[in-house]
Image 1 (cartoon, rainbow, N blue to C red):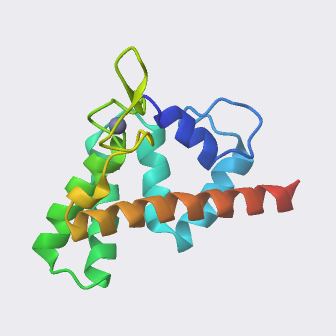
Image 2 (image 1 turned 90 degrees about the vertical axis):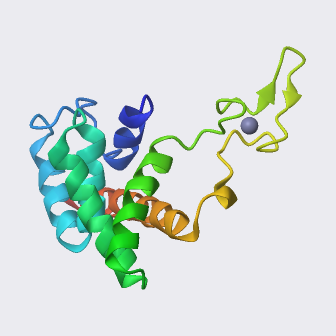
Length: 156
Ligand SMILES: [Zn+2]
């Protein structure tokens, strides 16, 4: 989860403080997060999850909202819950396992065949429910970024 701080930085890219410790967010960012969270509860859970040291509460918040999103896509509850955990895992590490995200193998820098040099995990190996879960997570995060930057721009 080494790139989490970078992703949180993206999610709250409109802040200038650079201090993203929970509880120490600038007031306007915290307010913007609160407003954005009302219409995007999964995105809110994702940002909280990314910004905090891993703890059961923030993980559960993501799982609950993600499983609900998958149920809305038509998966039954048990399948949705399983896929939510797997999707969160896969989303936490999207690096290609063959080349550890480098995109190249060995000293001659031969292009990694598993990921064709992209460095990204091959998602076609994951079940459809897990891929849908990852899409939900990525979309919620992107939406949160848009909501935050729109809101913080307006308040400037
Ligand atoms: Zn690779």
